[in-house]
Structure formats: structure tokens, C-alpha cells
Length: 178
Length: 423
View (cartoon, chains in turn green, red):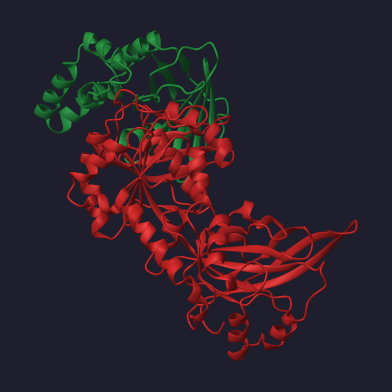
């Protein structure tokens, strides 16, 4: 894989401090193959275990992230790279290719409401990624009369991270997956 | 303000599932069912639930659910199927009637199963789809817990399942005594009969015999009821009979002519004069015959029998004790709040028809549709349940509107519900 900024930093760190530790860590990260990344991108919508080793690689390695996001984009039903109201404050709505995504707060809990256009096939998972690869994938329930609705946030850390990206990061990318 | 509590159970073959909360939302577009341990992903039955309570649903029309969506929260997941529909509809109805849905310590537990059709009929059990026997056996622990805290379980089940349910209950060592089995065909009809304080069809013979004994006891002492003095319910306690208010009253009139429709029991008047209350003057005034067109109203207090709660009265398993109060000089004698389950009015004399509107502090304590009523002279009383237990002194006005020779007339009466102190 191509050498990136992370690698430069690690080399400086290795010269200064612990060369052995850096070498072992780099070996672990390098052990992620392109095939593994592609398989991870193609995992099922509802069955959705996060692989921490691959997630770490996607967040730290620019090349790994590029391969992963390209694969996700390739199989997604709709992509949104920029929120329309990319000003300040909370982004409550985003327009996607197949509908509109809204974050609704009700009774101290956040809900994701996705209103699908009539012709759209129903997505089964939603992936949100920030500019540095942070985020993740969550399953979506079946639509009811053209609307997909589910709770978001709550006790789970990965959902809270996704909520944070959706609400406050206009440049976060959203992928709807089958 | 403390609301009455009821617990609604969705029985499954893997054990009972309790409804923990029903939350209303104006902002979310779809109604959903969630498990308490995972408030993120809705259960698979959510689509069907939205159809049941959403716009244009028969349940929404019947109960009068407002706009917006609902979140139903249950304690555990349950398998698919549709027998959860009847208990869920019950839970909505109870909530709209002012009940607190309480999974823990409610003394009234509704155990119901059955799929609903578009007319809210409970679909009959044709090929043992409801698995009544297994569901009751799986709920044995719940029944036992109810029995331990002195609660009661109402089994509302589809037509044709009664025998199986009774057999299953009998196998649970005495637990059939706390359970009332009712076979229900149409949910709104069954609920209407609840709201009128008529018991659901009680097919459990032991309970039916108990009822008959209780009725016989009341009828037996009917002639001497006016001799009871002193307690808050002492003045004219009239138990309602099983099949409808009118019939019950008629039978009681036969048993004790003094309790009959138009005339006030003389002993009641005497008791009030002797008690030296502020109404003494009014008492004298009441003996003067009023103009025939002036409406004469009678207040009816509905109370739970001693040891029972208003919830049991409300759900129809117990008859309310009824006591009547005559209007005196533009006001009714105050009512004691303790044990007061409902109120009612009857038009004794005056115009043929009158409309009644309640204004003042009573509004939060009754359902909005009960703030207006219609009365006919000598007709059945108009009664309503209190949706909350009054915890402070209340006073409200009863505004009576009626017509005399093309002109509309109004009268105002005052009634106080007091927490404690002199009547």
C-alpha cells in the first residue's frame, strides 16, 4: 500500500521512541488485505458485526479507506456527500437520491426518519462515514407506508457516533445499502 | 393526582409479555413497537401496529386517538402472529380512559389474546391457533403474583376459547378464583358495556354464584337501606343491577318504594335537617313545590364497595354503590372525595329535555367527552367515571340549558367534592 502521512509519523516515532512496538503495530495493520476490505464492504445489511481490526485500518489508513468507500459506494442505493444546509448548528434534514433523511428528537430520544420516494427499493442498512473514516453501519427496519423509522443513539456508542456525524458534520457521507 | 393503574398482558406460549408504556408523539410519522432493552430497532410487528392505530384505522375512530404516532414499549420480544392485537387495543383504550399502564403493582390485570378484523371483532379460534392452554400455563407465575398482592385478572378471550381457558385455569391450583373469564366477540361492544359499569359476560360459575349471592344480599336489605346513617355512603346506597342501569333501578324500586324515582326519601331530608348543616334553610325550601318548568336535578354519586377499588367498578366486575343527593337552593350537598368513582345526574322534574355542561375545576378529572350530557325528564341518569382520583377539594358548576316556549333558559348549580371535613 502507498505510504501515507501516518507512516511518516510512525517512522519519526520509531526513531524517537520504541522501534519494536511500532514495527509490530505496522505489521498488524499491514496484514489487512484488499480482499478483506472488499468483503467487509459487502457484508449484509441486517447482519452487521463491526470488525475492529478492519475499522481501525479504515480510520487510519487512507488507502484502505479509499478502497472501502469505493466498494460501499458501488453497491449503495443512494449516496449523499454533503448536507444542503451546511452552515452552522444542527442538520435536521438531508436530501438523498432516493428520499429524505431526517433526525427527529422526541421525548429525549433521537429517531432516524427516512421518507422514501415512491419508486425506490427499500434499503436495509445505512452507513455514515466522516472525513476520517469514523462512523459505521446500522441496520434499518422494513419501511411502513414508505417511511423507515428507527431509534438512534441511546446506550450504544457506535450509534451515538453516527448520530453525532448526522447532526453536526455536513461533510459526512451517507450510503443507503440494500 | 393519582391515576388508576391497570396492567395489560400479551400472553405468549413462552410466557406473558407486559405492556410497559404507550408514548404519544406528534413529531414521528409512524407508530412502532419497541422492546424495553432495545429502544433503537423496532420489533417486526411495527408495520401491523401502525396499521392498527394509524390514520384511518378502526381503532383510531373508535377510541378517538388524536393525531400523531405511538410508541408501544413491551418488556420482551414476542413471536409474530396477530393475537397481540386485542391486548394492544385494550391498552390504548385504557390509556384513553385515564388509566396508568403499570406493569408492576396494578391490582387489575387484563390478560387478553386475539387477532382483530377491520370491524374490531376478535377473530374466532377455529383450529386452536390461539394455544389458550399453553398461554395460560405459561402465565401461571403472573397469576400467582397477582393473587399474592390481592389483584384480579380479567381474561378477555375470543369466542369458543372459554372452556379451554377454564380447564387450564382449574389446573392451576385455586388460581381460577382470581380470574374472570369473558368471551368477547366485538371489542368496542365489550368496552361499551365496561364503560356503563355492566359486568362482562361472566361465565365462570363460581363468580356468577358469588354475584347472585351479593345481589340477593343487597336486595334483602333493600327495604331497610334508609336506616343506615352516618357514613359517607349512608344516604341511599343503591347498587346497580347486572343488566343495565335502568332495569336495576326498577327492581330496587320494587324492593324499596321509598327509593323510587321522583320523591326524595323523607329520611334523607330529615337527616340533613337534624345534622344542622348549612343546608337547613335549603332543606325547607326544597319542600316547597317548585314551578313545573324549573328543572329539578338529582346528583348521583358512584362509589366502590368497601374494600374494592374504582378500577374494578370501572371495568365492570363490581357494581358501584349509588347514592343520590337532591339539589338544595342552587347547590348540591358536598361529596366526599374518598372512594368516589363517578358522578351522575338525573332530571326528576321540569322540562322534558335538558342539556348539562360541567364547568370549573372538574375538567381534568373527567374525560373531555363527559363534560357535556343530555337528560330527559324521568329518564335514565347520565353518569360518568372520574378518570383521576381527586386529591384536593374541587368545586364546579353544573350549567343546565333547557327551552321554555321557544326561549332558551339557563340554570346554574354548584357542587363541591371535598377531601375531608364536614359535608
